[in-house]
Length: 433
Image (tube, rainbow, N blue to C red; front, side, top):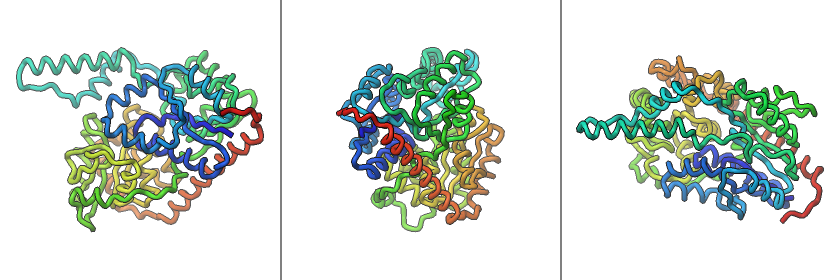
């Protein structure tokens, strides 16, 4: 059987890479008799927007992680006809996900878009060297706002798209841990919702990553009674050996036995700058030397993220830390897998004023929900310090946490088995090469 995985493998962050790698690597190892690969389709506007913000060195390092998993044919376009034609000719089974593949966001008002743009771009403060420099920087900031907020966000992919497999596609269609993310489900127009019902009804097997996505599928009232199975992120399938990072620590002059706290939050944003001012001094006051992880940070003691390392090397760095503070989900999965105490601030949920947090939902399963804050009224210096204090002094029961980690992996294995078993039973036998 020819199996293709269709996901956001090209967005060049540790979460996307880890999900795609873990799922493809597991399926290949478990079913070597099948040909499993990641369909190298990249949505053109999203892809070009992302690579414009990444260095050539980083692009090369991340591309090499998945090089052996990608299909021979590479497609970069904004449509879906070409990728559907490729799928029909070359695959028997397509697995979409894991990621936020069913995202829908209502476009905000003009006033709120401009306000948000100023807030997010305020780190680019105008120069005050001269009147000319000041006027130039104000003009450039204004142009960036206009381009970003009135020309649309190229990273937002319009519906329908390739990740919504067309009902007429002549393959077995499944999802693995698909998600709606922070979509504004209530804002979806009725006509679009009806189309979504048609597309999701045509899926042969539905696996979703979280309860909000399961609730979304159930709200569609699919006529065939099809249900969505909640599945942990496929990252829990990862069990490869991590890479040695002794040279990284030695290169930064980090001595054995140094008490290290890692921080992962992007600067030059409103939330990142505030966290930098609140978190780094607090960690130092607790006796930690502060290390940057993934996102460069010149304000820390050891800016390990200033250089480009492979994703597996960063995960080894997380394993070596004594404490870890992150604003994203997958680094916390690494912390759980490698038993590193941590705290999380879900700035995406905070920025969107969301009613839930995907990180908090994931941590709740481990009994670690209180290690994450995601509400706007908690995002202040006292709130952050209280979170850090609680997590640093927490009695981390790694035995219990490890048992749940194993349960998550077992559940991912079970869903993978279900997909392959279902596909083997329903395979038409058509030869696709």
